[in-house]
Image (tube, rainbow, N blue to C red):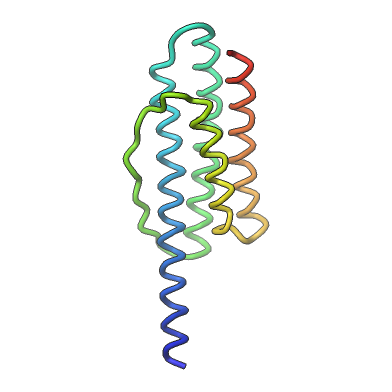
Length: 135
């Protein structure tokens, strides 16, 4: 019986670590959008700049809710932000992260917390629509 309890504790601990890493990745993604936003040039650059601003604002609000809700549900988290680079191709970057969020949904099993992932993905879909229309 002690072994089962210990295994469960390890599983919960590992799950918290994975959740903390995922939240760090959400934050890093938001910063990567800002890095691209600062360097956008060329045709329709002002419109791209504005589309990125809107998305960043929306994503930051959602990220704050994700982090606070996660803390409320599982307790303290050791969130680590991975290294951040400026994306070369913003559309591929956003599309890839959209898929990554889909994989991260496993951490959000309650309807209200899953809804936050819906909000994050909705903001990305809106950004993709705007960026693709500007090309």
